[in-house]
Amino acid sequence: MKNLRALLSIALLSIFMAGCLNYEQTTSLKIDGSGSMFIHYWTKWKTDKDTLLIDNLGIFKKDDVTKEFTSPYCKIKNIDVYKDFQDTTVHAKIEIEFPSFDSLNYMKVFKGSKFELKQGSENLKIFSQFVQPFATGFGIDSKKYHITYIYYIPGDIISHNADELSNNKLTWNFTLDQLGTGKSLEATFRPFRLKETPTWIFVLALSVLTVVFVFLFKKKKK
Image (cartoon, rainbow, N blue to C red; front, side, top):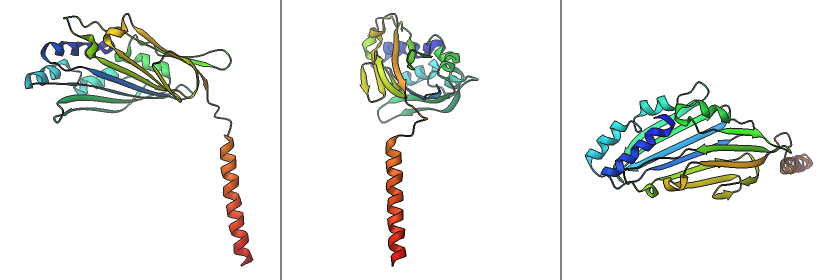
């Protein structure tokens, strides 16, 4: 499973199945560049033969998935591979913690993804990830393959090329035919200031102290 190649190989399933592949990657960044990532991909099967083919591909085998995401620089928090017989889907879920954003580049599965978090002008930071092109062939309908990238950014977002922005959450949605020669996910943001204590904290603390003093004063008066 090199460069998510195993995810590509699941395209062969479309020859046998009418199902589609869904891939979601959710990343939460911290100001120091560390963070966490949650990956979830799944597909459907129609017959027992389909499940055998899925097993042979390896992308839904826990040991194989673990090897691809193992890195000396990142920590695997959890890997869960399972089948849901109610809706005939098979799933893989991976939770990762990383000490720095660029350390993700050392995972086999992300080779060529070009994770980067760099300093910009005026105390701004710029992050980017390259989404590599997928070549399916075999007359497969690439519109059936849905890919979603979600990033939680630790600051005020100044500019971006995402499809959706909600507070500090950025979302990109693709089908394989939209990737073309690849896409770069990018955003520029002004990091939150951790050293500065928000005003509302002082107001809340003052209110609590006022209530305590009033309570003690009334108690003493009695």
